[in-house]
Every structure is written in structure tokens, then in C-alpha cells.
Length: 387
Image (cartoon, rainbow, N blue to C red; front, side):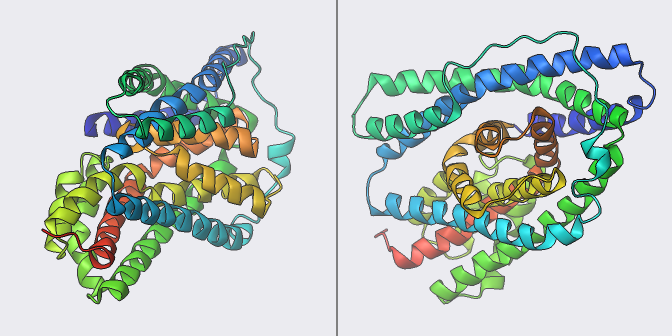
């Protein structure tokens, strides 16, 4: 997992650099070759994303049925509540800060009237079903499977999950840097690249600070509820934070997160249940990051931002990314579906979202897993399970 995540970040950075440099000198006909590839890859993404959503969400929800009880209910509610709170906090912060921060880049004429590389040909292969039906089906079917003991359908869903994970890891992820290369090649060719890099640096800086503030807030709340020193709790969880920075994987960090949570004073029975579950369903850092990037890119493109539209998007995002942390690149691949369908992002904007997400992947993951410790502290206080 660590190797895949690290290689992906390196390849994306190389793709961005090469696309930026070569876009200044590449002949138009070569650029059109990559534009043709990007058109085909975009169609492939549209075709696979509903299948990715079904493949990841159905078994994730179905497996929750294996652990019944109030602790499961509380953990899911706190994790989803934290994810939603992070999303709405990110939206309110971004919509307050970014209009002034990105003032000179918003709806710039260079973005509106820029030339672009056109593909030689286009091929369309529509998906079997759209993103929203996929979400509804995955959620309802997963809930139904929680009520069926020893279901053979769950085995089928788990096999389908493995097939989807294989397609992500062996097809989408290897081709993704080439897709991003083509996007940045086109942006350089069209003269947009200076604006994009300026936006990237500002957005990444703001999101990093938001992650830190969100972690402090989580542990202040956990400290207030548990009567413990929030800064001592956060300090205890720092090994998990730095491990996640290196692994870029919530799942790979579980042993460290679990050990540090116990050192924070959480009962072993509570920690052993909450930490592995939250590694899958608690995505506050990732949600914060995606929502902030979405707002920045919508402002950059001069797209209207409606609170109720964003509220629905954030709620769906919390559900969509369930189980995605187990697959390198799975979170943004699953999220891209609703980013496109609910917000109307173009292929170019989707590629920018993917690039921004991957560039900050380790920070989001570190925020996710460290916050798992805060949730465990709260649950240890409000629900005492006999040892």
C-alpha cells in the first residue's frame, strides 16, 4: 500500500512537471494525440465510476452487520457526524477565505477564452447506470445484506470489490499520471498554467492549516467530554499522525493508531473495535480536503456555488467514500463520480481535483487516523463496555 501510494505521488508530480514544460514546445499534432487519449480515459472513468461505487460501498456497509450493538451504532454516528462537520466547516471556511485569496484568478479572461488541444477522434461508451442510482443501490443493498446471515450474495459482493480494486490498482492508477500529463500539457498550451499553479499553492497552504485546526478542535471536544487534557491526548496520538504521513494509508497505520489510542487511556476493548472501523468510515480529513478543493475550483471557473447544492454534495460525499481508504486512489475515484454528476465538473476540472487530492493525500490520511483517536476517547467516555 505504501509503495503504491508513494509511487503514485511521484508519478503525478513528474506528469505535472513534464506536462508543464513540454506544453511550451510540443507540436500541436502530438498534443492532439494526448488529447485523444484523455478523451478515451475520461469515457473509461465515467463507465467505471458507478461500478467502483457499488463495488466499494456494498461490502463495506454489509460487513457492519457482523458487529451488532450500541457501540457499532455510536461509532458510525460519531464517525459520520465528524465527517459531515469537517465537510461543512471546510465549505464555510473556504467560501469565506478563497474569494479574496483567489480574487485575481477568479473567472480570468485567459481561462475563458483560452485555446485548447482537440482530440483526433472521440468514442463514447455510456455507463450501465448513472452515479446517483449506483449510490442508492449500493446503500440499500448493503443495508439489506446486513440482515442476511451467511449470505452468498455477500461473497459475491466481496469478490466484486476485489475485481473493482484490481481495476483501480492495475488499470486506472497506472494510466492516471498519463491523463494528468495530458491535462497539464493542454493547460500549458492554452496559457492557463500560471493561474493554476498560483491557485494550487494557495489552496494547499489553506487546507494544511485547516487540517491542523480541525485536529485541535476534535481533541478539545474529546478532552471536554472525557475530562482529560486535550493537548496531552493529541501529543499521544502524534506517532499515528506521522506514520500516516509516511504510509498514506489509514489501514496500514491501524497498528500504530491502536497502540497510541490505548496509551491515551482508552479501554482495550473499545479501542480494538473503534480504531479498525474508523479507519474505514471516518474520513474527516479527506472530506475537508475535497470540499475545499471543490470550492476553490468552482470559484476559479466562475461556477455558481449554492449552499443547498453543496450541503447535498457533502452528505453524499460522506457515504460515497466509505471503504475507499482501503484502496490507493479509491477515495478520489469514488468522489469524482458525485463531483461530476452533482457539481458538473469537466474532465479538466476532475483532473485538477485528482492532482490536488494526491498532492495532499498524506495530510488528509494523517488527519483521518489521528481523529480516530479522538472518537475512541469520546466513545470510551459515553459508552463503557465491560472488560
